[in-house]
Image (cartoon, rainbow, N blue to C red; front, top):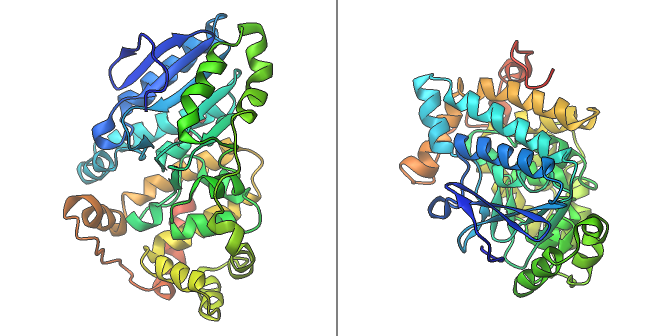
Length: 357
């Protein structure tokens, strides 16, 4: 949503200046600002330019349109590229993951408004930032297990560092969170009512450049309120109890022993997902807990994506979600206990191609 009036320039990535703020807006509102390869490249160029500009003290990222920040990467392109074997999907992911790392180590304050739909790649351009704002409209999710994929964009790093087992629940179920839950899981920092966002950003843009970096947090804090209660507040004990296992089978068994509505809902969500993706995701999270930095997790995820395009579940998941839209994928294998260990191991084999030196 356009919160600040400025002289924006660009196509799918819009940039502008407002006071000491460098503005970046994702501009594909008809497809919920889904990321294309060109967008990722232009986003990186904008970050480079703003970082080098001494008159820019911080960067603000928003999404055009009324529906959300970003629904993720262009999965139709990924589907078509995997079918064609043309390498475009791999090139996109390589650029995207490097952008995620770039955001995490950005030298200037990186402010992002995560209103509306913020999923997949949208989480990648927001939750790695330094100043992350949610509103009452926020719907944050990593829904990849529902399309035969696994949470990527450095999500294994973020999910594995969420309190307790909140990240495990998020990664396996793919369920959407509200703003309060996003903060509880460590994916966001502040809850600001949407009606106060424009006022907040105007106040930040009015700050003098030398002081802006030191006063952003206090300025945001002055506009925050207590958000609505989230699912995690009510269901934390059950989530921590049922997801504290190293196999998906044990997690499912623990949920089956529960009698609450949340347990039943969670169990139904997991059973609808790709069994192979569930096992790969859980192992990604367990491996990430032992990892020292985001880049290590991104390397592991990138290696895993090279296997995704060789597995039928990804194509079936995309078919059911966006090609035929019947929402009825036929996973192979169809049962969690039917996934052979070598099929999971294949996602974790070392690859010759690396993202970082």
